[in-house]
Image (tube, rainbow, N blue to C red; front, side):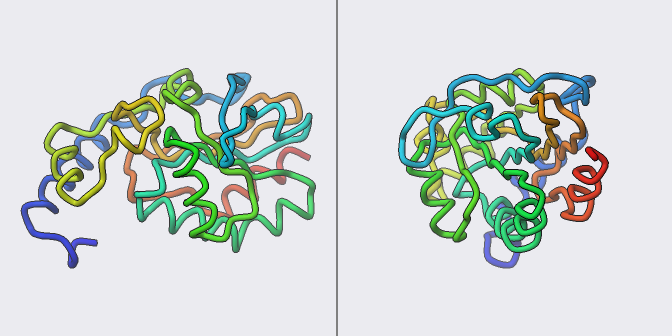
Length: 203
């Protein structure tokens, strides 16, 4: 991305990225053994749903991403579609992607990346907040993002700026976190092989 953005814009994003990395993952965030909160979510068509409904007493892989506007997220979700979904489908395990964006953003994400798995909205980051994996971009970063034509407050369902750290959870059949991988650096993502290994260990 750096080659396509002005140097001062890159500096702002880099500084905010460094801040998030330096802050790291909060102690106790998204720990295995914790039941995943199961509030009402909104599917890509605007209908109410929940993780419990979507996984239907099955193990599941849950991916938290920032939004349709995030190029790193789109690359990751497309990779999971191509490289992870077939393996999970063979085991009867659903993949569910969650962001705080409005349902039309979820629909855009699904359509743009030709995703076959559920893409849902969690207004106000209810689940991510409960897990301790929420961050807020700096004011400077928000201003630069706005100049690039991306209004985070408009994109997010609650009109706020908070975003989840890119995170992957593997849930057991009870909805309890069996494995988690949280990335304070939003330019990195969980590797497919690591997710498959965690799913395999479920038995």
